[in-house]
Every structure is written in structure tokens, then in C-alpha cells.
Length: 185
Figure: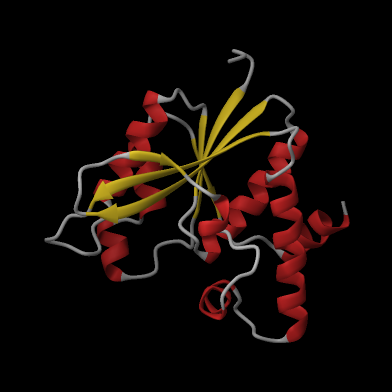
């Protein structure tokens, strides 16, 4: 691998926050020819951890289900849905462009049974993978701390930011001005 490549790890869990992070990352990818992007998704199970290649369409659907659309869209009007599809198509076009270095990776991790809201096992998997593969940057979407438990224990994104020795970029929901600019390019 070329040492001049800038290795970026994008964590995606299929959420609206991950959608914003993917769109922002796609703009970086278009503007940084030496960027090598890995899109990481973590599935939780009770088996030993294993690694396998992953299809982007499993978490970033080209033809989203109504359930997935409900989570991504804050409005259900036709204009919002049309804009979402335009954004999704453009982002997919960038990620699937053969000229870009994009890898889709899926990891399996054991979940802590004592606390269903505990994300420390996810943090560890992400940070271990990033360190082992010499990433230069981790990108993750965030909605901010919204619950009392979140304020006390932190969110996955904020905990990654605090624990990582690798720089972490937190992406909030993108403003409409950014989306309009992205779609006009």
C-alpha cells in the first residue's frame, strides 16, 4: 500500500447520524485523491469475534425499506423523500466509484449482557480495529448527549473521541446549505 495514503475509518450503524457522516465523508473522498476509506459496521452476537467482507447495501440500502426510511427521514413528505433519494444516489455513486479506494468491513462483537445500553464493547472493537490497521482518522456521526444516562456515561461517539489516540471527527446532522451544495456539485 502506498504510504502517502490517508487512511480513514467511517463507522456506520445505519442511523440518521451515520447517514450524515457518510455524506460528509463522501465529500472528503472526492476532494482527497490519496484518501483510503474503510466503512465499518459492527454486528453484535454471542459468538467469538470474526471478520468478514461486507456489502454496503446491507446498512446503506439502495432501495430502503419503509422501516429504514422512517428512521432516516424526519419528515415523510414527498419533497424530503425525493431529496433523501438524491443524496443517497450521489453518495452511493461516490462510494462505488471504481477510482476511489473504498473497503466495506463488517465485524462481529460480543455484547455485554448486563447492560444493554453499554457501548464499551463497540468502542473497544472500533479502536482495536483502527489501531491494528493504522488508520489516520475515525469519522462517526453524533446527535449529542440526549439522556441523563448519556450525560453520565457518554455516547459511543464521545467515548471514542475521549479514548482514541487516533483523531476522531464527529459529524452532526448536516445543515441544508451543505446538502444543497453537495447535490449541486
